[in-house]
Image: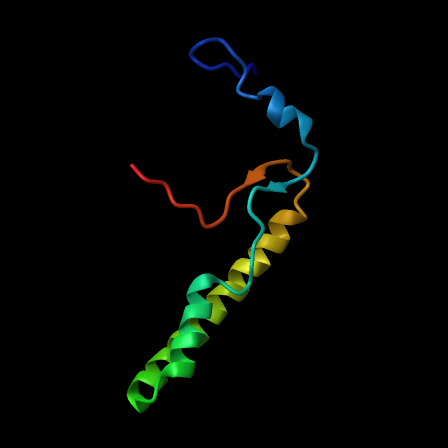
Length: 92
């Protein structure tokens, strides 16, 4: 099967042929900016109800970050070469 685009050029560019393993453009950081801000907010709060809400959100975000970290490790050990993007924002 021949892979060709509309212009007759192969989908596999020279750039993709040069990598042999997964490449992450931005490395995963377990301590997200959102989690750091929540911890700062928790440290500066005195209201008990707010502290409980922030603490619950920190626990949830920690759980999410651990899950993303596991996926990152598995993708990093993949035998398939690819470029990985994480936590990017596109503006239209």
